[in-house]
Length: 357
Image (cartoon, rainbow, N blue to C red; front, side, top):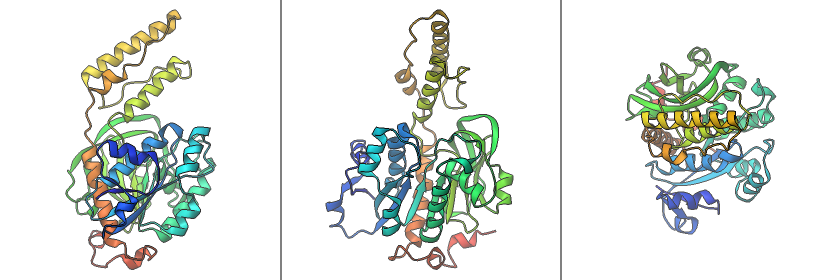
C-alpha cells in the first residue's frame, strides 16, 4: 500500500518520480484503509540525511500490508548540522515532543557518524536513550540500524561494541539461523547484506544479552537479532536499506579524502561488491590519482558513472521481504488505540511466543 505524502518533504516527490506508490493526504483520508504511523529517527550526517529518508521510506512503502503509511521523520537537536541540513530539518521534520504527543505504531532508528571511542561520550547519547526508553513503553516495535544497534546493546544490555581493527566494508553472504521466526518467514535462507563499520557486537555478546539471533554471516557476524520477546526491539548490524550505489559513494568519498591529503592510504576495494570490470576501472583510477599526486598534476575525475553501470544489487529483495514481515507484524499487533501497551497487544498464541527459547 502507498506512502501518504502528509507534508511537503521532498523525499515524497522523489519517490513518486521513481515509481513508488505515494498518494497525497487528501486522497488518503477519503479511503477506508487503516493507517500505520512509523517514525524515522534520522541521525545520519548532512550528506546522507535525505538518502536515508528515501531508503527507509522506500522499504516501508514497498511492503504489502493492507495499510496506508504515514512516515514521521525527526532527529536529535544535539547533532551538529550545517545550515542547509538545519533548514531542511526545521521545515520538514517533526520534533520529538510532537512524536510523543501523537504516538507511533513503530519506529526506525538510523545509524550515525561517531567521533568518540566510547558511544556514551557522544552528544546524542542521552537523547537517544530518552527516545529508546519512550519507544520501549509506547511503541509496538523499534528497528535499530547499525550504530543504533551498538548504542542500544551498550546502554540497555551492557554489551560494548568491539573495534575490528579494520573496516568491515562490502557485501557479505548471510544465513537464516532461526527459520521459524515471523521476521524471516518466506525469506531466502541465504542472502547478501551490505556492511560498513569499524566495530561489531559479536555473537557471544548477543547471546550474553539474551537476545535472539535470526541471521548471521560467517565473515560479517550477526546481522539480524531481536529482543528476548522476539519483536519489541529489532537489531540490524548491516545496512539492508542501502541503495545499489551507496557503498560506491562511500568509496568515492574516501578516495577524495586521499586525494586531498586527508587520508594517509588509498582506500582498498570493497569485499564482494565490485565486478571484475569495476575493479579494473578503479585500479586504473588509483594508479592515475597516485601518479597525479606525485607529479603535482590535476587529479582525474572519479569514474562514478562507469562503475555504477556495472554494479549488481543482491540484497534489496530480501530487505524488502524482512521489512514487509516487520510491518505486517506491527499491523497485526497494533490495536486501534496506538498507545495500547505492547504486552496487552500480543496474543499468547502468537508465533512470536511459539518460537521463544
